[in-house]
Amino acid sequence: MRAHPAEYDLIAPGKLTAVLKLLSDEPGVWMPIAGGTELMVQYSAGRLGARKLVSLWGLPELRHIETAADEVLIGAACTYTDLKDHPVIAREFPLLAQAAAWTGSIANQNRGTLGGNIVNASPAADSLPALLVYEAELLLASTRGTRRVAYAGFHTGYKQTLLAADEIISAIALRPQFASYHSYSRKVGTRNAQAIAKLCLAALGRVENNKIEDVRLAIGSMAVTPLRLRRTEEVLLGGTAGQALIADARKALEAEVAPIDDIRSSAAYRLHVAGNLLQEFVEGLFA
Amino acid sequence: MNTNMASRQEVSFTVNGEPHTVSVFPMERLLDVLRNELGLTGAKEGCGEGECGSCSVLMNGELVNSCLVPVLQAQGATLCTIEGLAGENSLHPIQQAFLKCGGAQCGICTPGMVMATVQLLRRHPSPTLEQVREGLGGNLCRCTGYSRIFNAVLEAAGQQT
Image 1 (tube, rainbow over the protein chains, first blue to last red):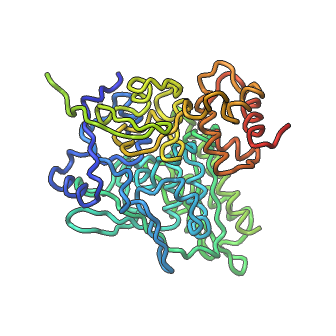
Image 2: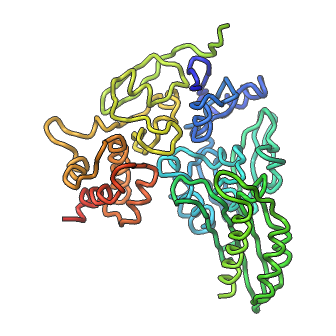
Image 3: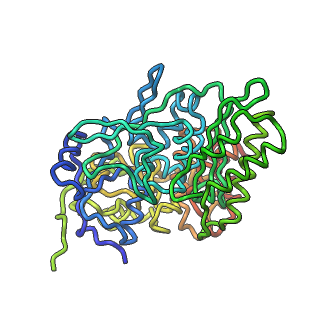
C-alpha cells in the first residue's frame, strides 16, 4: 500500500555538523537520505521502515572531489554524474567511471550517490566491485570524530555494514596507483540502462616478463555482499598465459562464490558467465 | 491512533520561471506536488520507482525522476517541466521534431522523452545515436519501438533532414 506522506518526517538541517548532532542525540531514529533513488522507491511502495528522515542532499561538505598526489577523496554525496564528469576519476579510476555510467539511467545518475550505494549495501550494486579492486577506504563521521576503515571489511553480511547508528560515510578515499594496470569490467544484465546486474566483474592486473605480477578481482551479484575474489587472485598470481591457468582460475572462482537463483538469473548461469568474464579478463591481460 | 509524524510546511521553488510557495508534507513526492498542487500534469506517473522516466523534470538544470524527489529537497530549486518548454504560440524545437518525426503514440512517455532530450542536447549538442540511446535509456516507451523517438532527437539536433 502506498505510503501517506503525513506519516513520515523529513528535515534538512543544511549543515553536516547539525546532521551529525541529530544522529548522535537520537541514534537509530533518523535515517539519512541523499538522492532518494533507493529510499524513495521503498517509501512509495509503503515498505520504508524509517519514519524520520534527515536529508544529506545538497550538503556542500559531502559533495566535492579533492585530488592530491597520493589520494583522491570523493565526498559521499557525490552523484554518479559527478563521478562520470570528473577527469581524475576517468583517468585514474576508469572502473569506477565506467560503473557510474552503467548505474541506472541519466536521471538516476543525477541523484544517486556513491555513499548511498555503499550504505544500501546491495550485492548487485554496480560501483562496489570497482571500490574493492581499488582498495578504497571509507571515512566514517560522527560527533565522536572521523574514523577510517577499509571498504573491504565494511559489509558484514547481507545488507549489513560496520556503520554505527550515529555515523555516516563522509568520504571515499582512493589511492591513484593503478595507472600501469590493465583494467577490465563487464556488467551482464538484460539491458544497459536501468537493469540490475545479473553479475558484474571488475578486475585489475599487471603482467611483467609474461607473468601476472599483480591482480585484483571483485564480483557483484555472486554472494551476499560484493566480493573480492582473493583465492582466485592467488591462483592467478605468478601465472603465465595458457589454458591451464584459466582452467585453474575458473575452478577457484567457482569455489569462492555463492550465487543464487533469483528473479534476474539462475545460479548456474551466473557461475558459467562469471568464469567466461574471468577468462576474457585473463586473455586480455596477456594480449 | 494518530500516526502523523509531520505537519505541513511551506516549500518554495521556481517552476518554469514562476516562483511558487506550497504548503506540503516534506516527504510528498515532487511529482504529486507538481500535479496536484500546481496543476502541472505533463509529468506522468508510470512506475513510481524511477525505472520509466515518465515523470522526468529538470531540477536545477539536471534531469531527475520527480517521483523519487521528496519535495523538501526541491526547496529553493529551479524546476522546469514540459509545460515550460513551448513559447506562447510555438512549440519548442524538440517538441516540433517529435511532432514531425512521429515520435509519439499514446503520449504517456512523451513529456519525459522530451525532457530527457533537453538534458541530452545541452550536454551533447550533436549526439551520436549511441549517446541518444544512453541519454534516453531511462525513459521507457511501450508503443513506438523507439526508432521514431531517436529520429526525432537527431532531427532536433539538426542531424537529420
